[in-house]
View 1: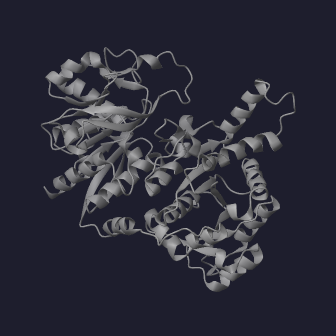
View 2 (view 1 turned 90 degrees about the horizontal axis):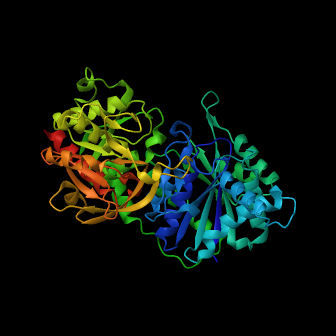
Length: 535
């Protein structure tokens, strides 16, 4: 049986529970202990798939096609192992399961209640990964903050698990904010005290308190928090602001968070942590030898979490190329033929980002045209690839009015069309082409040079495809379809051979980029931008 660690948060959201959970898992992994992380989200949506990116940031897609919380991206990037549908559970999914059971008569006529029926289903999901026998430790992040109405069933379930399992098999790490008041020139511990009190009132007592703070916590403050929150003095640890999230595991190592956990859970079979690769990555990240300016052309640029995996992939690829990637956000709605040179002309590369809907589409097409005609390194992902196809259709193939049926159902040349199996679907949630699919790559192409393989697997999230009725017209004009699905023949990769770097992919390579295995497409794109910057 696995050991269980629950990570809760108080005072405010966005404190970094996901990063603390991922950092702890990384440290345990470095000590030879197998760990996984799961996220329980308190919202009633079944998954984030239908949520507006402005509302919730990006939707992270797993290998098995689950639309999940963006924190799962952090888990994969830190641990370099894939997550699955089991790693992200929402209140909506819990209630949906319980109601389906009730409708099927599985509760034998009993009154269905939050306790025990909802909490039993939560408990089943919380303990599920630990029963597979693959992990020594399962870390569970509880979304939201202590005191939220939505989080109460999750907190109650943690209380029950603490009560049911042996003391050495379960522990709670509570993350709080210790604000610094500039006027008083002091750190304030009262918010942490109140947060822990609310957690204790719900019957859950933290074993470790991790304090986010802008200023260092001295021993006196740590002792005060320990005394008032009823934890051992050595189990109040500091989580100071870091210059990058990838520093956090090393900071937690200094604070001995992993040793505290190992002691509490009575795990004795561990080794000295090996973080050589991680430290080497950090060294390259902190000491770049050059800078490249990459334009991120998107329509959700006001919220950076909307493109979280892309931004992290730039960090991974930048470190590999020993350059600092300076991402310049360009709102696609602002781009016109008159100002495109002014907006992107001084950049070293363009990435046209994924998205849905008509807003900002023409600006993306104009940006692609500028990159194609001016030998500016270009990389298109999902919708970005489709924009490259539409631009090429209009301006090279000569198909006036070419478009995607998503934006223009009456287009005379629907070069991007809806997949046949999607046309009968009316429900939005979980109905796209999701998860990992194979892609066969032609030799003697840029894609083959990048991947060094004739067959790859990448993750997808879309319902529109390149229309193969126009395939020959594109190929006759010089666009190479270098990657296709070996089963369906659907186009996965397009590229232009007579260009320094011009490639578009239907899948999402950013979803598989990790610290130890950066996405090859990003690495080569940044290399091309680096070359362009040198002139």
